[in-house]
Image (cartoon, rainbow, N blue to C red; front, side, top):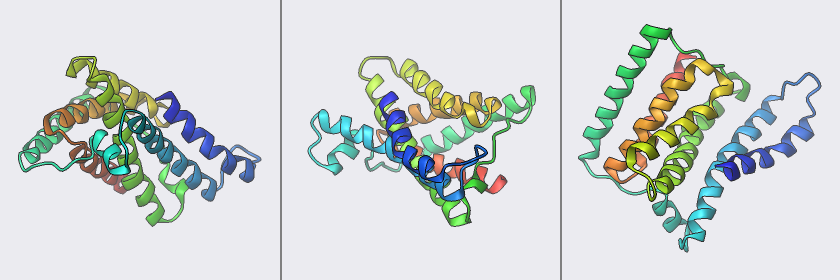
Length: 205
């Protein structure tokens, strides 16, 4: 995880240097590059680790990271995951109020770029990194609940800078998606639900 984060930061540094923000605010172009760099870090490091553990092609690496076909029974688990998450989110909001997150969409400029970065790139890269690599790796040494909890905690912590009140629901979301991977044998259902969640959040903003 540290390698993935470090790679994303390193890939984004040139854009920050070139942009040279005088008041701490990056330009739209630099924000887009930094976000893409983060997504690349979350993709390239898991792929490299999969290659180190015997994957000899991109297809094999993706398969090892959970990018596999899923079957019709997975749909019921996807519906169950949505239901459990909505229940948790509703209870959390009733007790603590609606979580607040910084609106980063506008910093990416035009709507097509917002959709690409928030509703497509982020879900794919984060699921490969947090569920495919992290949960998948932890699962070889830990029970599924413990592995899912650790991956969920780190997933939620990653988003702390955009709004601390949104961290608990995101921890729950990551935990649920890890168990969905366990049940279906594929991270693709989780990617689809993650895309749906981010799309709803984007529309709401």
